[in-house]
Amino acid sequence: MSNTTVGPVYDTIIAEVINAVRVDFEENGVDDGALEDLKKEWQHKLSQMKVAQFPWDPKPEPQAPPAPAHAQPTAPPPTAPPTAATYTQSTLSPQSAQQTLSLPGGLLPNANPMGIKPEPGFVQAEPAIKQEPGMQPIHPGYNPANGARPTAAQRAALALESQYGQRAAASINAIHSGMQINPAAQPQQVPRPGQAPQQHMNPQQQYRQGVAASMQQRMQQVPGARPPNGLPAAQLDGLNDATDTASGPGAVHPIMMDRAQIDEHLHAQIAARAKQMEGGGLMLPLKEATKNRSLPEKPRKADGPSQLDGLDDDVKSEEDDEDAINSDLDDPDEGGDDDEDDDETMGHMMLCMYDKVQRVKNKWKCILKDGVLTVNGKEYVFHKATGEYEW
Amino acid sequence: MANPSNNYYDLYRHGSLGVALTDALDELIGQERIDPQLAMKVLTQFDRVIAETLQEKVKARLTFKGSLDTYRFCDEVWTFLIRNVTFKLDNGGQMVNADKVKIVSCSSKKNEEK
Image 1 (tube, rainbow over the protein chains, first blue to last red):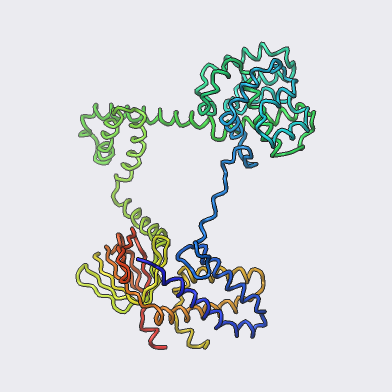
Image 2 (tube, rainbow over the protein chains, first blue to last red; image 1 turned 90 degrees about the horizontal axis):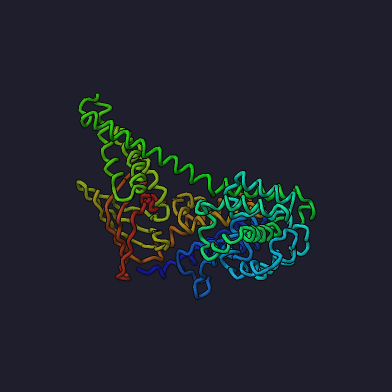
């Protein structure tokens, strides 16, 4: 089914309409340029819809403009959370991590040039960092990767380091080694398997990685927004960023989810036991019996091979069951579905005239004419259409 | 020309051609290059031109089958929601399928009365 006729037909319509309203434009004292612009804009908007090949389009139909490369690693969008920078830094230039490791002065918080070197691949960030040399020692303890858990331990490490610098390295390391007991709890570390051993060798290096990434991020976000040596302020910024990251997509929500799942699990088990005690719900009043009749499905599912999957099912089935208690409640839902269908079909629409609409029992037969049909993103025109459908 | 053009339906304004025209007119109105009354005149001309063009220039015939989900007849307008539709144009043998299609159809009688 080709829609090659659509282009010329629409072209004719546009030309005719433009010609027909030319008089009106002149009567209203509107210059011809507006009319030409109207035509161009009309054609342009039509081309954007890509419903057909139009005569005014260049022969090879203009493809959709390529989606802007959001995944551009060296230039993350300014609004991207600092974790994104960490991720790209660590995955794209793992050799830079090794470089950091080999640096003798890598542990020194004030070793500024050393801190810059780990990211030679980042052309944009390098000059920016050089402009603000005082930045480097500001947040040696700030690491978006670890920032996912802004624990008291981390805050303590941060405070220690800022206050005592290198002298406190030993105690900081002690704190960090304590924090690294369960690295799996840090979501940002999961996609960087190649670096994990290095990080465990020296948490300080890990921080430097994070610092470098976060600094690059900051440079792009607020170049020169902070005083170069404003130690406490900058540090606060770092901390807050880490906190934001954590409370955003990071660690807090999984915990909540777990809790909810545990609750669901307990609820299911208690319900199952209660049901066993009840002897299958025979002793209950009718209303509660209906409620419990839906429950046996849940333990059955929960006993399946994967407990977590079973739990998820529980959540869904429980919602379904609540709906199923009262069948009257389902009816408005169906009505709502119909409304949604109406909206969804806006993409698939036929506008036409009808000559005849006949119905015999549930069989309908329509004779339609002069129609425009939009379906699957393509447009078709027809002079006459016959449709047969059953209700 | 203005008077008989009132006899045409404005349902084609909801098609892509009409939507594109409406958007373009809205832009011109937003730039205060035309006033809304003029835009309405353009749209009424569009109603006439597209109806006449579809009537006179288009020859294609279409058949389609499906299962009727919803039908509605109100103010001389039929609205059908059809599921699992198969369209077939007579010129090309290829079929086009769609999950659901909404058909909005006005009486062809009004056109003939003009």
